[in-house]
Length: 90
Image (tube, rainbow, N blue to C red; front, top):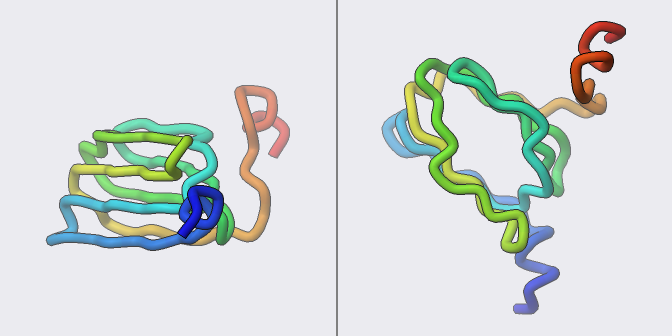
């Protein structure tokens, strides 16, 4: 497998609702203790929970690892608002 294919391939592994590992991540738009918004090769993903922490983010390989109490993750086909003004006018 080549590196470009690995970055485009999207996988998601959730362990005990405490550790979430993902591949195919292109960017992380926003994050705080309650929500993480990321762009993947399969669309935008919103991860919700509490005490969320980004343990690893490597955009070269497309890997994201999140820990905390993970309550939900949702794929969103609509582009996410970026920055302060994007959130104000969304």
